[in-house]
Length: 255
Image 1 (tube, helix red, strand yellow):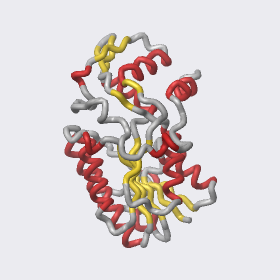
Image 2 (cartoon, one colour; image 1 turned 90 degrees about the horizontal axis):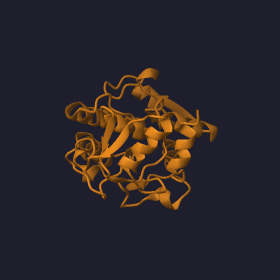
Image 3 (cartoon, rainbow, N blue to C red; image 1 turned 180 degrees about the vertical axis):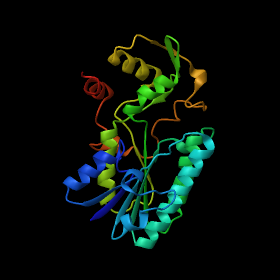
């Protein structure tokens, strides 16, 4: 089948495109770098022509409250309108576990808005919410850098390897539309401050991590239920999400 992956050149999209192609599908990796812009609509109709499935995984160039909301609302509306016009039968949206539990974080409000637009579309939808990626822990640590220390909340998370998310999306994309939300999570709940300390140690970074729960997450208020799966942790019961953090860490910083 023909599958269009919006955001197909990114962290999740690139391995997803490769996996789907290896399975024999006709896959279009759509992004501004390949001539497809979901804000202006440029190239989108041509990319979707004859497609059965669109996987919606682009990311906003800005995380500021106004721009990120504008990006996800505009991009999602553009995609669903073009998908409906092209006769696409399945719209797969990647979102974030707990997005609706963190309304004081602008990025999460934008992802909730994305889900609402997709769910109201005439194109059958599958909403896949994933927990935080292992690959983003380093950036979260840098966001808490303060001289020779890194200040991070000890909030509970259940992060997942990006490769496991790509693999799960590949399965969802070729299946029937779910018409609901499913959640992807890694195999173990872990504390953000501990995760940050382990990444710094693996990199040989001498800075120490200091627990600062008042920082929350992206400046928002969180508790131990905010970032952990609750509705349908699909991958904890299946083969996806099996990669443990220590296993990923040893590979990521093997050099």
